[in-house]
Length: 359
Image (cartoon, rainbow, N blue to C red):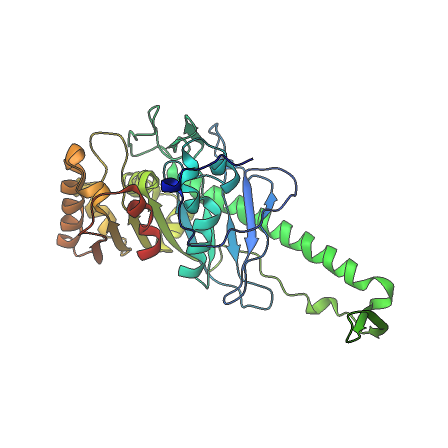
């Protein structure tokens, strides 16, 4: 049962919780959502193996896609969450993290689905959470105990993302195929006839009416995600920004692989949302040689920050690095925007999370 909460700890709900599926337990969750339609129940599917030879969990989180009958989108949004963010059921049973359950993986997936209504939303979990609180992206960058990164040029983060997507796409295709075959078999039973009941004015069930129709298998419409012709948006929030930063360090070497190079060319936009970690530097990348390589990609960059990170007097380097990051990219001719939210408010973790709502 949920712990009793003090009145001051009650958090206002901004998004409706999604019902959780009860299929085979796994680390990957998928849900299908069409533009303008209500989200369907989340279901669990098997984890997507990274296949890159490194140990550790290879997981992608909530997947949102178009509803049946919608044209297949060619855009995919990859989101890397920050500290404490986890599945809703996990957060609600944590003695501290329940305070931030509004920002669970499911709820953020909902926010992103409304922000990017025509694409698939992929939430990619870290491989480790120290003390069930600190996100550690060991699967993308060498990290210390608390998840602070040790960046390098050859860790293989790009290769891991690409392989993860290929495997996850295949999983999604199999899942959707299986779902539609089951629906077809169910709808084809009983001579393809359906019974409907009329109701009298007193609420009693009246005579059943039986209608039959021919079920056309070719009418089944489902669109599993595909890398073919796809474009991508990458979003890092808080600690999740370490993944985006690692990708910048790897750009030059990663382009030598033709598959990875094609993937990089299809990345259209990258969002840094209030990046931060416990390390004493490299919260924002400021190396000119690294940023020059990044600027040559033509990717559009958006940074959204709050006083929680960039105005923290105990971590003054974060604000300085952010300003330098934006300045250097602008000097190299990159299309970059920078916005600070809640600038007149005192730094707070609540406004830090609310960056999801205003970016």
